[in-house]
Length: 453
Image 1 (cartoon, rainbow, N blue to C red):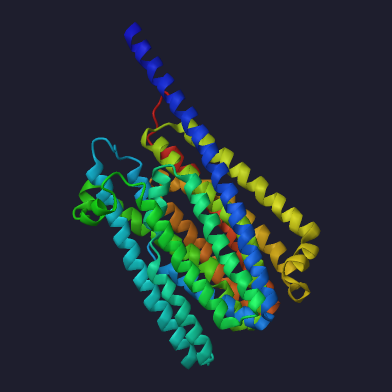
Image 2 (cartoon, rainbow, N blue to C red):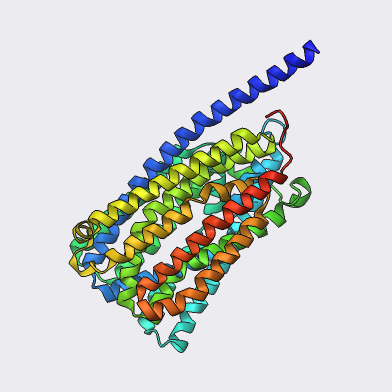
């Protein structure tokens, strides 16, 4: 009896040390990512401000729709490999099973390559079809085709997985800032030179390619020796035997991300189609600024996801729920604070940033920030459901949200213009938050937690 008591005490002490270590690491990781994200987005907004001042709202709308087409196809058709890689990689013991680690990364890299080629092919086909179906000017199609080449170099899924599995959050932050700085310096030079839409699109394409390649090259440096050579030689054959359920998880998580991204990415294109390019430009300006809030939610989720996966694997219920609750409250408070700032002083901030020509973006931004606050408030719940292996719940929630968005966005835009897209995003956010909370409560009740934790 005494021996059993000592054994239980040791287990509890070890679990306590693990929770403290994860907590300290999580705080450091969040700090690094938030600092890097804040700096990156501030620099990016400066670049966008220079572009907005350099060209008129209609030209900026065309520029925004070109970027949105690429981003939408990347998110919709690219395979978000980092999710299954992190979930499965968090369970690997590197000292005894390094071979499985490289096989898993090779699997993710192949998914990235296949997804990037598919995204480029579909996006290019849509750009060409727009000339014949929607009478888009051929010079604008050519600009789109030039930018879309950047999709072929997107290996960010496996890079993200390597960084997060090795706790290289400071490196992620530094790369983000460096890439944003390079783009800003080039855009600043273009602003001084007074370039046009062609040169700006080319700058965005080149900097996107170099940023993705730099991300991948630096991530490979953190692989165990011999590193890249072993990644090339690794075989992903039999990956489903090594990691049971990885395909089901990958497809389920990817479908949910595809549906999510469709609502988040194609809205600018819908506004440009149903309204006009100038409205699309104003809407895009508001969305770029609201991404400050959206990115913070994504980065915080990326930090807690590996920890939640480890806690789910060790069946530690109390620590698991504590992380979810703390993260949800943190993101809700942050989003609310951003909404209040924009509501109170958004107009002078917008005029100072991009000029009086874009004053119409302020009401759009206010509602967009409110919608984003709702979506990021469910970020930890989404990560928790994925960590518990219930990607089906996330998929069902996204399906309901997407249905709410698409059934409302077209009539709302026709009635209220660009503001209608933001109102549709509000409906999406409400359905998202409510659905995740309901599913997480059910999943937590069914999960086989350790009784004494």
